[in-house]
Image (cartoon, rainbow, N blue to C red):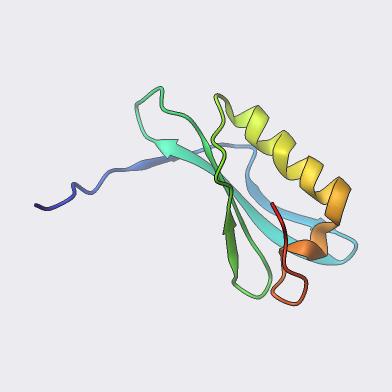
Length: 86
């Protein structure tokens, strides 16, 4: 059975974020034209990706989770050299 290809809606809160000279790309998304929960994914400079297992009722909650992770572990925790625990 084929899985239908669905379009994603990206939050305007996502995008490249630089702190302490280190840039990551934050993706906050859900299926387009739905009231589904939001997913948070962060892609590091090295191309590694971390997707939260937790989902969020709104995009602001997802962005706040990213900010908490940066405050607790630093932005470099999203690189392969310093694995994150998010």
